[in-house]
Length: 122
Image 1 (spheres, rainbow, N blue to C red):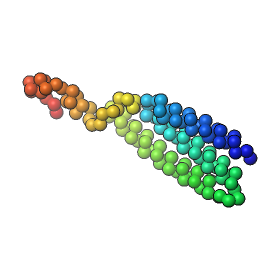
Image 2 (cartoon, rainbow, N blue to C red; image 1 turned 90 degrees about the horizontal axis):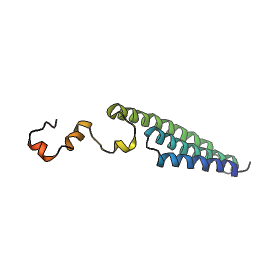
Image 3 (tube, helix red, strand yellow; image 1 turned 180 degrees about the vertical axis):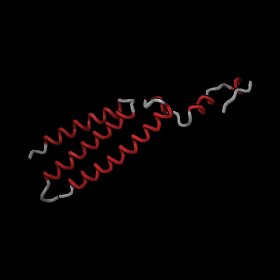
Image 4 (cartoon, rainbow, N blue to C red; image 1 turned 30 degrees about the vertical axis):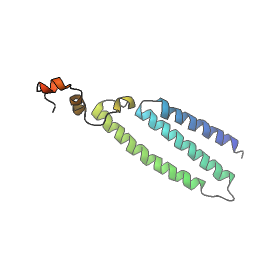
């Protein structure tokens, strides 16, 4: 088997995943980009396992390990995205820069004059 074909496909997958990671602002699409990158690494591991079958026999084991870790990562990440969506009603990464509760953020936006007049910040 020629090693060039799977490595080229893997490089393309990794490039698309990197683009999705850097250019997208939706948390779910960023997560999909990370998964594409992990699958590109899996393709590399299996391709090198086939190419180096005589000396190295652990490519498929590493690929299964990466798939297991990726499945756990997707479960945790989607649970976090769902919790953030329920709290903030958005999954846009640009709008999620502030940590804390939405009411606390509104209190921080009050000016000193409004606080002096006795505005309720709780």
